Length: 137
Image (cartoon, rainbow, N blue to C red):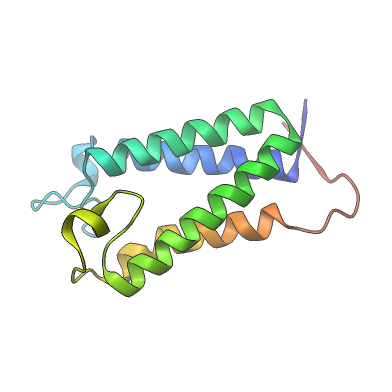
């Protein structure tokens, strides 16, 4: 079976997002203050967001190239915007913290994953189609 670049990318996003959803439940990844890798405070809303996003990525990767492109474009734009909002306000709109807690003091680094995954999704989703590059699975 072969995967196009968008399908392989969506599969990689699925692995990253499902890993993110699981980290809050692995004691080895949490510090004494409950932060994952000593950086992030996750909660049930963030875990649900990561799980749903990971399952969406997995379904898109397995469904078709077109579904994977749609995932990368939509996910990338939404997560990139969420990262920018988080960098400016210290709160995220995807987990509703912007609406529930307002502006917060949050380290810029905590927005890094959304900024980087969002940017990667946008770039990969709108990558020029010059042939059908595939990756053997």
